[in-house]
Length: 242
Image (tube, rainbow, N blue to C red):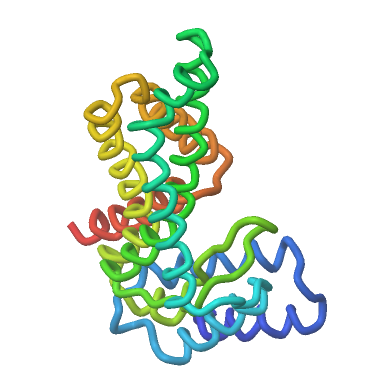
């Protein structure tokens, strides 16, 4: 059975049975086969049918355009970064002068506030990492969808995702990880330069995010899992041609 006929069968089954776990499993198996094809063999019919089915299964609607969403998250990062710098420079002095907390509590309070601000920096910077990963991979996005009540995600334009090469596709998932860790590593020397007492939070977050990515990887979800999956597909195809 050709991939085109498999996709037609999945579409018909989806019409009859609706969205089921078995249909999703079969569909993603077909997508895996498509990713292993040479670009010349991935026809417009395959791309159109695959993108159509994927959009039926991916039920999140776009609520914000790419440009508006990126602009929103830019200002989140900007204000959080200003707060981060201001806190490191002045907040400890304010605590000592006006509240007179013991040194240990001052350290805890300072790092607690820095923790909140860095989380906002990471929250606002992550969509930019995903977008830049798409630029590297030559993959477009439809816009931002509501991933959860307090979180927006970038919806991939699946046609461009299938049309790009295996060597580029992985960076849609790999670059955001590098981007976030890079931001943490940049914040470390900034914190050390402005106020060494505030270095513990970014250092701790580097370790915690490393653990976080490994945990969700073993649950077979998240960017790291998808990045490794694309790497495996690329290596598998390259080995088969040797």
